Image (cartoon, rainbow, N blue to C red; front, side):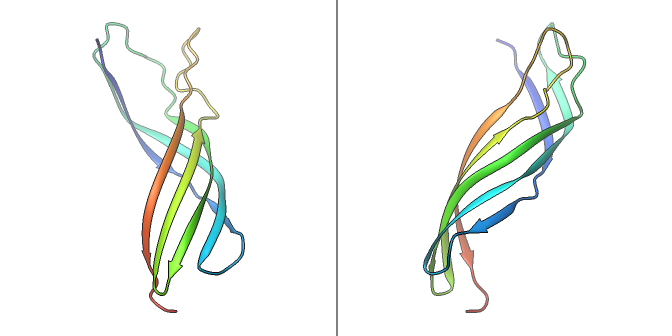
Length: 111
C-alpha cells in the first residue's frame, strides 16, 4: 500500500446568522474557502504530476451555543465540499468532501 500526503493552508471566512438571543442560540454558517497546496509527497510509482495549487471550496453548517453567565459551550457541524478538482490529470477527477464536528468553549469578557 502506498501513501500520498497533501498539506494545505486553508482560508475560510464565514458569515454566522444567529437565530435569536438567550441562553441557547442556534446559528447557521456559510462562506467560501480557499485551500493553498503547501506540500505534496507520494510513495506511489504513479504520483500525481498536475495538482491544483489552489482549490476553491465552500463551508456551510449549523450549530448552537449555550451561554451560562460568562461561559459559552458550543457544538457545530460543518460540511466542506471542494468546488474545484484536486488535479487536472485526465481522466482523474478527484474532489474532497469533508464533514467536521466541533465542540467549543468560549469565555465572555463582559456580560
